[in-house]
Length: 409
Image 1 (cartoon, one colour):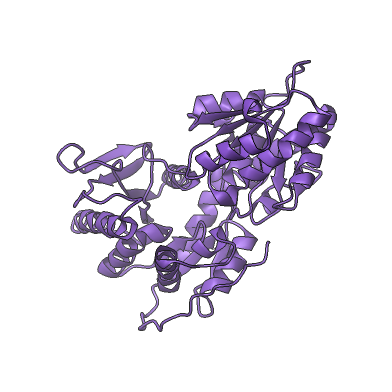
Image 2 (image 1 turned 30 degrees about the vertical axis):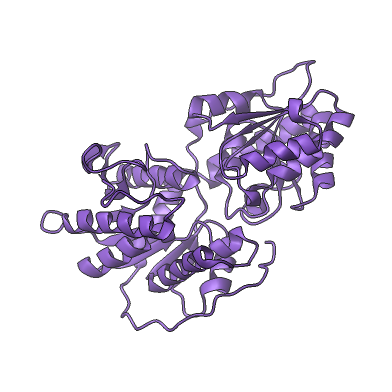
Protein backbone atom coordinates (compact mmCIF):
# COMPACT_ATOMS: atom_id res chain seq x y z
CA UNK A 1 0.00 0.00 0.00
CA UNK A 2 0.91 3.67 -0.38
CA UNK A 3 0.56 5.20 3.08
CA UNK A 4 0.63 8.92 3.88
CA UNK A 5 1.27 9.45 7.60
CA UNK A 6 0.66 12.88 9.08
CA UNK A 7 2.26 13.64 12.44
CA UNK A 8 3.32 16.82 14.21
CA UNK A 9 6.46 15.09 15.47
CA UNK A 10 8.92 12.74 13.84
CA UNK A 11 12.66 12.38 14.48
CA UNK A 12 14.61 14.54 14.99
CA UNK A 13 11.56 16.49 16.23
CA UNK A 14 10.50 14.53 19.33
CA UNK A 15 8.13 15.96 21.94
CA UNK A 16 6.90 12.77 23.61
CA UNK A 17 6.09 9.14 22.91
CA UNK A 18 4.04 9.93 19.80
CA UNK A 19 7.08 10.78 17.70
CA UNK A 20 8.85 7.56 18.65
CA UNK A 21 5.67 5.60 17.91
CA UNK A 22 5.23 7.06 14.42
CA UNK A 23 8.92 6.52 13.61
CA UNK A 24 8.90 2.85 14.61
CA UNK A 25 5.56 2.17 12.88
CA UNK A 26 6.62 3.91 9.67
CA UNK A 27 9.92 2.04 9.43
CA UNK A 28 8.25 -1.30 10.25
CA UNK A 29 5.63 -0.75 7.53
CA UNK A 30 8.35 0.20 5.05
CA UNK A 31 10.29 -2.95 5.97
CA UNK A 32 7.14 -4.95 5.13
CA UNK A 33 7.18 -3.53 1.61
CA UNK A 34 4.70 -0.66 1.90
CA UNK A 35 5.48 2.76 0.45
CA UNK A 36 5.40 5.18 3.38
CA UNK A 37 5.55 8.96 3.24
CA UNK A 38 5.60 10.81 6.56
CA UNK A 39 4.47 14.43 6.52
CA UNK A 40 5.86 16.21 9.57
CA UNK A 41 7.54 19.56 10.43
CA UNK A 42 10.83 21.27 11.11
CA UNK A 43 11.93 22.31 14.58
CA UNK A 44 9.85 24.87 16.47
CA UNK A 45 11.06 28.45 16.41
CA UNK A 46 12.45 28.16 12.88
CA UNK A 47 11.58 29.90 9.61
CA UNK A 48 11.55 28.86 5.93
CA UNK A 49 14.77 30.75 5.17
CA UNK A 50 16.92 29.05 7.80
CA UNK A 51 15.05 25.72 7.85
CA UNK A 52 13.34 25.12 4.49
CA UNK A 53 11.12 22.12 3.83
CA UNK A 54 13.10 18.92 3.36
CA UNK A 55 12.22 15.76 1.42
CA UNK A 56 14.52 12.80 2.03
CA UNK A 57 14.56 9.03 2.34
CA UNK A 58 15.37 7.74 5.83
CA UNK A 59 15.34 4.05 6.79
CA UNK A 60 13.13 3.27 3.81
CA UNK A 61 10.63 6.03 4.68
CA UNK A 62 10.20 9.21 2.65
CA UNK A 63 10.10 12.02 5.23
CA UNK A 64 8.80 15.46 4.25
CA UNK A 65 9.46 17.95 7.06
CA UNK A 66 7.71 21.22 6.33
CA UNK A 67 9.00 24.68 7.14
CA UNK A 68 6.97 26.82 9.55
CA UNK A 69 5.16 29.22 7.27
CA UNK A 70 4.04 31.67 8.51
CA UNK A 71 6.51 31.34 11.35
CA UNK A 72 5.71 34.08 13.86
CA UNK A 73 3.52 31.88 16.07
CA UNK A 74 4.67 30.32 19.33
CA UNK A 75 3.09 27.01 20.31
CA UNK A 76 2.79 27.87 24.00
CA UNK A 77 1.38 31.35 23.44
CA UNK A 78 -0.56 30.92 20.17
CA UNK A 79 -1.46 27.21 20.17
CA UNK A 80 -4.37 27.28 17.74
CA UNK A 81 -2.77 29.80 15.38
CA UNK A 82 0.44 27.74 15.42
CA UNK A 83 -1.52 24.55 14.71
CA UNK A 84 -3.38 26.11 11.79
CA UNK A 85 -0.17 27.57 10.32
CA UNK A 86 1.65 24.24 10.62
CA UNK A 87 -1.35 22.43 9.15
CA UNK A 88 -1.40 24.83 6.20
CA UNK A 89 2.26 24.10 5.48
CA UNK A 90 1.56 20.36 5.61
CA UNK A 91 -1.41 20.69 3.26
CA UNK A 92 0.67 22.61 0.75
CA UNK A 93 3.42 19.97 0.87
CA UNK A 94 0.82 17.19 0.58
CA UNK A 95 -0.74 18.78 -2.49
CA UNK A 96 2.74 18.77 -4.02
CA UNK A 97 2.70 14.96 -4.07
CA UNK A 98 -0.14 14.94 -6.61
CA UNK A 99 0.98 13.81 -10.04
CA UNK A 100 4.04 11.91 -8.85
CA UNK A 101 2.66 9.87 -5.95
CA UNK A 102 -0.92 9.24 -4.83
CA UNK A 103 -1.53 7.53 -1.48
CA UNK A 104 -4.07 4.78 -0.79
CA UNK A 105 -4.73 5.93 2.77
CA UNK A 106 -4.03 8.85 5.10
CA UNK A 107 -2.99 7.98 8.65
CA UNK A 108 -3.47 10.85 11.12
CA UNK A 109 -1.83 10.99 14.53
CA UNK A 110 -3.75 13.12 17.03
CA UNK A 111 -5.69 16.38 16.84
CA UNK A 112 -2.74 18.62 15.95
CA UNK A 113 -2.84 17.27 12.39
CA UNK A 114 -6.63 17.12 12.02
CA UNK A 115 -6.77 19.95 9.48
CA UNK A 116 -4.10 18.65 7.05
CA UNK A 117 -5.14 15.00 7.39
CA UNK A 118 -8.82 15.68 6.69
CA UNK A 119 -7.98 18.05 3.81
CA UNK A 120 -5.55 15.61 2.17
CA UNK A 121 -7.89 12.62 2.51
CA UNK A 122 -10.61 14.67 0.80
CA UNK A 123 -8.22 15.96 -1.88
CA UNK A 124 -7.02 12.46 -2.80
CA UNK A 125 -10.50 10.96 -2.12
CA UNK A 126 -9.07 8.16 0.01
CA UNK A 127 -9.85 6.69 3.45
CA UNK A 128 -8.51 8.38 6.56
CA UNK A 129 -7.43 6.27 9.54
CA UNK A 130 -6.74 8.10 12.80
CA UNK A 131 -4.80 6.93 15.83
CA UNK A 132 -6.06 8.80 18.89
CA UNK A 133 -3.11 8.70 21.27
CA UNK A 134 -4.76 10.66 24.12
CA UNK A 135 -7.65 13.04 24.77
CA UNK A 136 -7.91 16.46 26.34
CA UNK A 137 -10.69 15.25 28.62
CA UNK A 138 -8.60 12.29 29.74
CA UNK A 139 -5.62 14.48 30.54
CA UNK A 140 -7.90 16.60 32.76
CA UNK A 141 -9.75 13.71 34.46
CA UNK A 142 -12.84 14.21 32.31
CA UNK A 143 -13.19 17.95 32.74
CA UNK A 144 -12.86 20.22 29.71
CA UNK A 145 -12.79 23.84 30.81
CA UNK A 146 -11.25 26.97 29.41
CA UNK A 147 -11.18 28.16 25.82
CA UNK A 148 -8.10 26.24 24.65
CA UNK A 149 -9.17 22.94 26.22
CA UNK A 150 -12.62 23.23 24.64
CA UNK A 151 -11.05 23.93 21.24
CA UNK A 152 -8.70 20.93 21.55
CA UNK A 153 -11.63 18.70 22.55
CA UNK A 154 -13.64 19.94 19.57
CA UNK A 155 -10.79 19.17 17.16
CA UNK A 156 -10.42 15.69 18.64
CA UNK A 157 -14.14 15.11 18.17
CA UNK A 158 -13.98 16.37 14.57
CA UNK A 159 -11.02 14.14 13.74
CA UNK A 160 -12.64 11.07 15.30
CA UNK A 161 -15.97 11.61 13.55
CA UNK A 162 -14.36 12.30 10.16
CA UNK A 163 -12.27 9.12 10.32
CA UNK A 164 -13.07 6.02 8.29
CA UNK A 165 -11.36 3.82 10.89
CA UNK A 166 -9.90 4.48 14.32
CA UNK A 167 -7.00 2.94 16.22
CA UNK A 168 -6.60 3.01 20.01
CA UNK A 169 -3.53 1.83 21.89
CA UNK A 170 -5.47 0.12 24.71
CA UNK A 171 -8.92 -1.14 25.60
CA UNK A 172 -9.32 1.69 28.10
CA UNK A 173 -8.47 4.23 25.39
CA UNK A 174 -11.01 2.59 23.06
CA UNK A 175 -13.70 3.00 25.72
CA UNK A 176 -12.65 6.59 26.32
CA UNK A 177 -12.95 7.49 22.63
CA UNK A 178 -16.40 5.90 22.45
CA UNK A 179 -17.58 7.65 25.62
CA UNK A 180 -16.36 11.08 24.50
CA UNK A 181 -17.04 11.15 20.77
CA UNK A 182 -19.67 8.50 20.04
CA UNK A 183 -22.10 7.27 18.96
CA UNK A 184 -21.75 6.84 15.24
CA UNK A 185 -17.98 6.47 15.07
CA UNK A 186 -16.18 4.22 12.63
CA UNK A 187 -14.85 0.92 13.96
CA UNK A 188 -12.17 1.27 16.64
CA UNK A 189 -9.37 -1.32 16.60
CA UNK A 190 -7.14 -1.78 19.63
CA UNK A 191 -3.48 -2.11 18.62
CA UNK A 192 -0.95 -1.67 21.43
CA UNK A 193 2.16 0.39 20.99
CA UNK A 194 5.22 -1.64 20.12
CA UNK A 195 8.85 -1.52 21.12
CA UNK A 196 12.11 -2.40 19.43
CA UNK A 197 13.70 -4.40 22.21
CA UNK A 198 17.07 -4.42 20.45
CA UNK A 199 17.42 -0.70 21.26
CA UNK A 200 16.92 -1.42 24.97
CA UNK A 201 19.39 -4.16 25.97
CA UNK A 202 18.36 -6.01 29.10
CA UNK A 203 20.54 -5.70 32.19
CA UNK A 204 20.13 -7.72 35.36
CA UNK A 205 19.91 -5.71 38.56
CA UNK A 206 23.23 -4.69 40.00
CA UNK A 207 24.18 -6.05 43.39
CA UNK A 208 25.23 -3.19 45.64
CA UNK A 209 25.36 -2.11 49.28
CA UNK A 210 24.82 1.56 48.48
CA UNK A 211 21.44 3.30 48.97
CA UNK A 212 18.69 2.49 46.51
CA UNK A 213 18.12 4.62 43.41
CA UNK A 214 14.65 5.25 41.99
CA UNK A 215 13.86 6.66 38.56
CA UNK A 216 10.96 8.51 36.99
CA UNK A 217 11.25 9.40 33.31
CA UNK A 218 8.77 11.13 31.06
CA UNK A 219 7.05 14.47 30.73
CA UNK A 220 6.74 16.60 33.86
CA UNK A 221 3.00 17.30 33.76
CA UNK A 222 0.40 17.12 36.50
CA UNK A 223 -1.31 13.99 35.11
CA UNK A 224 1.97 12.06 35.40
CA UNK A 225 1.65 12.04 39.21
CA UNK A 226 5.33 12.79 39.91
CA UNK A 227 4.34 14.96 42.89
CA UNK A 228 2.90 11.87 44.59
CA UNK A 229 6.17 10.01 44.09
CA UNK A 230 8.02 12.88 45.78
CA UNK A 231 5.43 12.82 48.57
CA UNK A 232 6.06 9.08 49.01
CA UNK A 233 9.83 9.49 49.19
CA UNK A 234 10.09 10.30 52.95
CA UNK A 235 8.25 7.04 53.81
CA UNK A 236 10.49 5.10 51.44
CA UNK A 237 13.62 6.66 52.96
CA UNK A 238 12.50 5.74 56.48
CA UNK A 239 12.37 2.08 55.46
CA UNK A 240 15.40 2.29 53.15
CA UNK A 241 17.65 5.12 54.34
CA UNK A 242 19.51 7.12 51.74
CA UNK A 243 17.19 6.24 48.84
CA UNK A 244 17.40 8.81 46.06
CA UNK A 245 15.09 9.72 43.19
CA UNK A 246 16.18 10.81 39.71
CA UNK A 247 13.57 12.62 37.62
CA UNK A 248 14.43 12.59 33.92
CA UNK A 249 12.32 14.78 31.66
CA UNK A 250 10.99 18.28 31.30
CA UNK A 251 7.61 19.99 31.29
CA UNK A 252 5.43 22.67 32.80
CA UNK A 253 5.43 21.21 36.32
CA UNK A 254 9.16 21.22 37.04
CA UNK A 255 9.03 24.34 39.23
CA UNK A 256 6.15 22.92 41.25
CA UNK A 257 7.95 19.62 41.66
CA UNK A 258 10.98 21.42 43.08
CA UNK A 259 8.67 23.14 45.57
CA UNK A 260 7.09 19.77 46.43
CA UNK A 261 10.55 18.36 47.18
CA UNK A 262 11.18 21.32 49.51
CA UNK A 263 7.81 20.80 51.17
CA UNK A 264 8.64 17.17 51.98
CA UNK A 265 12.25 18.00 52.91
CA UNK A 266 13.79 15.72 50.27
CA UNK A 267 15.45 18.32 48.04
CA UNK A 268 18.87 16.74 48.45
CA UNK A 269 17.48 13.29 47.67
CA UNK A 270 15.86 14.36 44.37
CA UNK A 271 17.88 15.00 41.22
CA UNK A 272 16.26 16.75 38.26
CA UNK A 273 18.20 15.28 35.36
CA UNK A 274 16.41 17.10 32.54
CA UNK A 275 15.57 15.55 29.19
CA UNK A 276 17.68 12.41 28.71
CA UNK A 277 19.00 11.20 25.38
CA UNK A 278 18.62 7.54 24.50
CA UNK A 279 22.03 6.46 25.77
CA UNK A 280 21.66 8.54 28.94
CA UNK A 281 18.24 7.07 29.61
CA UNK A 282 19.48 3.54 29.06
CA UNK A 283 22.26 4.13 31.58
CA UNK A 284 19.73 5.44 34.11
CA UNK A 285 17.46 2.43 33.56
CA UNK A 286 20.35 0.01 34.02
CA UNK A 287 21.32 1.71 37.30
CA UNK A 288 17.93 2.10 38.90
CA UNK A 289 16.48 -0.25 41.50
CA UNK A 290 12.95 0.62 40.39
CA UNK A 291 11.37 2.68 37.62
CA UNK A 292 8.30 4.35 39.13
CA UNK A 293 5.50 5.64 36.88
CA UNK A 294 2.63 6.96 39.04
CA UNK A 295 0.40 8.48 36.33
CA UNK A 296 -3.16 9.67 36.92
CA UNK A 297 -3.85 9.24 33.20
CA UNK A 298 -1.96 7.13 30.68
CA UNK A 299 -3.55 5.95 27.42
CA UNK A 300 -0.78 3.39 27.02
CA UNK A 301 2.55 4.13 28.64
CA UNK A 302 5.39 3.45 26.20
CA UNK A 303 7.79 4.36 29.02
CA UNK A 304 6.71 1.21 30.85
CA UNK A 305 7.73 -0.91 27.86
CA UNK A 306 11.08 0.87 27.61
CA UNK A 307 11.78 0.28 31.30
CA UNK A 308 10.72 -3.37 31.02
CA UNK A 309 12.90 -3.92 27.96
CA UNK A 310 15.94 -2.55 29.79
CA UNK A 311 15.26 -4.76 32.80
CA UNK A 312 14.21 -2.09 35.32
CA UNK A 313 11.74 -3.36 37.95
CA UNK A 314 8.44 -1.53 37.51
CA UNK A 315 6.11 0.18 39.96
CA UNK A 316 3.20 1.87 38.20
CA UNK A 317 -0.31 3.13 38.77
CA UNK A 318 -3.03 0.85 37.46
CA UNK A 319 -4.82 3.41 35.27
CA UNK A 320 -5.55 3.24 31.56
CA UNK A 321 -3.00 1.56 29.37
CA UNK A 322 -0.54 1.18 32.23
CA UNK A 323 -3.01 -1.19 33.87
CA UNK A 324 -2.89 -3.30 30.70
CA UNK A 325 0.83 -2.97 29.94
CA UNK A 326 1.85 -4.07 33.47
CA UNK A 327 0.41 -7.22 35.07
CA UNK A 328 0.42 -6.64 38.82
CA UNK A 329 2.59 -9.15 40.65
CA UNK A 330 3.75 -10.77 37.39
CA UNK A 331 5.57 -8.14 35.31
CA UNK A 332 5.64 -5.38 37.92
CA UNK A 333 3.70 -3.93 40.84
CA UNK A 334 0.64 -1.71 40.34
CA UNK A 335 -1.12 0.61 42.78
CA UNK A 336 -4.13 2.93 42.63
CA UNK A 337 -3.38 6.42 41.32
CA UNK A 338 -3.13 9.45 43.66
CA UNK A 339 -2.19 7.23 46.62
CA UNK A 340 1.26 8.15 47.95
CA UNK A 341 1.03 5.63 50.81
CA UNK A 342 0.29 2.71 48.47
CA UNK A 343 3.03 3.89 46.13
CA UNK A 344 5.55 3.97 48.98
CA UNK A 345 4.51 0.49 50.09
CA UNK A 346 4.97 -0.95 46.59
CA UNK A 347 8.39 0.67 46.13
CA UNK A 348 9.48 -0.65 49.53
CA UNK A 349 8.33 -4.13 48.52
CA UNK A 350 10.56 -3.97 45.43
CA UNK A 351 13.56 -2.73 47.41
CA UNK A 352 13.05 -5.34 50.15
CA UNK A 353 12.90 -8.26 47.70
CA UNK A 354 15.42 -7.78 44.87
CA UNK A 355 15.07 -11.41 43.77
CA UNK A 356 11.30 -11.05 43.32
CA UNK A 357 11.83 -7.77 41.48
CA UNK A 358 14.29 -9.54 39.16
CA UNK A 359 11.79 -12.34 38.41
CA UNK A 360 9.11 -9.81 37.47
CA UNK A 361 11.57 -7.87 35.30
CA UNK A 362 12.46 -11.04 33.40
CA UNK A 363 8.76 -11.86 32.90
CA UNK A 364 8.15 -8.33 31.61
CA UNK A 365 10.94 -8.62 29.07
CA UNK A 366 9.67 -11.98 27.82
CA UNK A 367 6.17 -10.56 27.38
CA UNK A 368 7.50 -7.72 25.23
CA UNK A 369 8.90 -10.01 22.57
CA UNK A 370 5.59 -11.88 22.18
CA UNK A 371 2.96 -9.13 22.45
CA UNK A 372 4.59 -5.79 21.62
CA UNK A 373 6.86 -6.50 18.65
CA UNK A 374 6.73 -3.78 15.96
CA UNK A 375 6.40 -6.36 13.18
CA UNK A 376 3.12 -7.52 14.74
CA UNK A 377 1.93 -3.95 15.34
CA UNK A 378 2.70 -2.96 11.73
CA UNK A 379 0.88 -5.99 10.29
CA UNK A 380 -2.23 -5.28 12.39
CA UNK A 381 -2.14 -1.61 11.39
CA UNK A 382 -1.83 -2.51 7.70
CA UNK A 383 -4.95 -4.68 8.02
CA UNK A 384 -6.88 -1.66 9.34
CA UNK A 385 -5.63 0.38 6.37
CA UNK A 386 -6.69 -2.24 3.81
CA UNK A 387 -10.14 -2.68 5.40
CA UNK A 388 -10.89 1.06 5.64
CA UNK A 389 -13.34 2.43 3.09
CA UNK A 390 -14.02 6.11 2.56
CA UNK A 391 -17.55 6.77 3.77
CA UNK A 392 -19.85 9.51 2.48
CA UNK A 393 -19.42 12.74 4.41
CA UNK A 394 -22.45 14.29 6.07
CA UNK A 395 -22.61 17.68 7.78
CA UNK A 396 -21.65 17.18 11.42
CA UNK A 397 -24.02 18.36 14.13
CA UNK A 398 -22.71 20.32 17.10
CA UNK A 399 -21.72 17.87 19.81
CA UNK A 400 -22.01 18.74 23.50
CA UNK A 401 -18.73 19.10 25.35
CA UNK A 402 -18.74 16.56 28.14
CA UNK A 403 -17.60 18.00 31.45
CA UNK A 404 -17.55 15.11 33.85
CA UNK A 405 -14.98 12.87 35.43
CA UNK A 406 -14.12 9.88 33.29
CA UNK A 407 -13.84 6.67 35.30
CA UNK A 408 -10.34 5.35 35.91
CA UNK A 409 -9.82 2.39 33.62
